[in-house]
Length: 437
Image: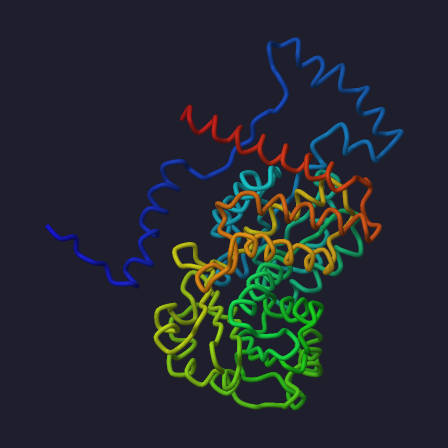
């Protein structure tokens, strides 16, 4: 009997029932296991009292030794208040916890990094900053996740200034890094130059705001970029945005033509559409793709449903289409970046993460795919191409050393060896545990 063909939408929604069933079966996704040997109760005399007292005294004398004698140099806190979760919006800390657990297992499996979900029952910016500062001595880094704007911007900037460990907002820096990596190769496939390309950015939230900044650092003229928020195109007449520091900056730097209108008008003549807005479909109409330039590139990256379905964009002439989903080609996913980024910064003990480190990581991701042979349905590596995480880690770590923000100076070859060893050991340990389940 011939197998009935599923409709594209039905096929795209097939994971939802399995997710509910399997999350219930395992009752979550993370647990804590020791990494030191416990052969009997006598071992606790070393790992706990009385032996541990000497370790405490040594750290008291030399505070930096906390990174040597504890797991702090490999731990990150995943902080969220649940106000901007995926495409689901403000669903609260409890409902955000499954996402943060998922983030933790990606950190461990792909980067060998120990990550702990910390969801907060407060939406107050000052309180969130206080919590992060209070718990910072336990962690080597802070990963801010799914926090609403505009406070996500100020929380990141405040913590970067007030803490001497890396602070990262994945919805800003992570999204921007991976988006740039995909764009670098997409432009190569369609044969367009970064100095001349015209880009329409749909959405002016945390993701596209950071992406705008990284695109201009890469060398794309800011005047060639048009950004659209929920009200319309950002331009120098949008005085309603003068009190929004991030958006007003974009108003003054972008849109050289001072174009007005909405998404439709922003897409007219554009070479590239980078949509990081609200879940679709239908946010971007099929017919609007026709008005773009020759061989248009469309990134429709809202989750869980893209702003326009990939097959619809293709029908209307898009040469390259990328989304945020793993079940379509060209997944633009933060997971390509943050595990390797933290692996790299931890192994050189960097004090922060800079835009230059993001740019170096984006170029490393793009080069990894280019070496394998880029094409319309392969502009960025897939998550199962595990060697890409090593490249990101090395790029980020070496840039941190170059910028003078690393506690440890290490040669590139030595850093690569350390990164490969840490990631492989972590993945092998997880696989052994899974085999015994």
